[in-house]
Amino acid sequence: MMTSVATESGWIGAFSPVAFTNVLKRVADERRSGELQIVSGNWIKTIRVDDGAVRFAKSNMQQDRLGESMLAHECISKSDYRRASERMANDACRFGEALLKMGRLNRKQLHRELGVQVQRIVLSLFRVPEGLYRFEETPTNDTRLPFSLSVPSLLLKGLRRVDDGRLILSALPPADTVVRMAERPTYDFELSKLAPLERSVLEKAGGGATIGAIVRGASLERSAALRACYALLTLGLLEIADDKKSERALSKPSSFPKLLPKKTSTVWLAGTASNSSSSTPRCTSKLKNETERSLSCTSSSRSRRPTLLIS
Image (cartoon, rainbow, N blue to C red):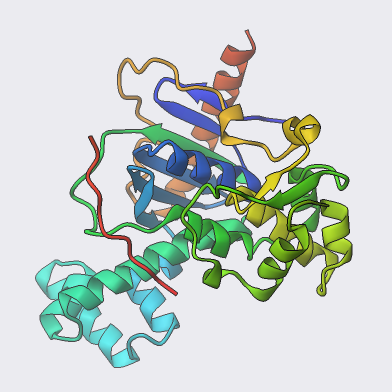
């Protein structure tokens, strides 16, 4: 089974919703800046993070484009979409700028729609069963959107979408592990954002209860309770109470290989800026080859930006 390995300026490995969770959590905890790129089948999605927060995301899938996304979610009409598309062609501008020129949106509204688009791209990855990923650390980029998306909030929303019960079970500690409500939660998280089942799991955990007992006492199906336990442990709202079993807990971000000393910036997936799906198989093959080479080798002052709250 392929694991995460270090590169000169980041790390690379097999993608799964759990691996994605661990990578995002590490990026947030260590306030890293860079690009996380995921390849699966014929698509490529890239997430830009600065100081541990998501700032931007892009995809070569047509359904992830701003116009298509807004139209699909009925944020604009078909007439708006057609007029904006024509404006794009005539003025050689982006879809969002076309909406601004038309007076359909103001700047604040556009930023919110872009934030919603970024969130949708990120959350879509929690439904992807497999693929390859690479995180490339780069300096903070101040040219992106003037807001950030909270990684803990994205993790909570994303993990609710994971429907692979076996994957969640494999990521959890053993059923006889005692967990409890965290005395000092990892993140400053609003409990009001938790779903009823998640709040119920916290209450059942209280000062200490086994994961098995919590799941058996849940009002919903077992897979939903397990998913809630995993999400709460990931967010640091639950913590391992039994020190002897703490080492068998979740795959922690600290278990990732440390970054190697950065020498020069490496170029990965050259030409992926193009949205042409015809070039994707070559990109995927190149990533697989580089991953295999990496595995072979291993075996031998930050500024604060406003956080965009999107329900």
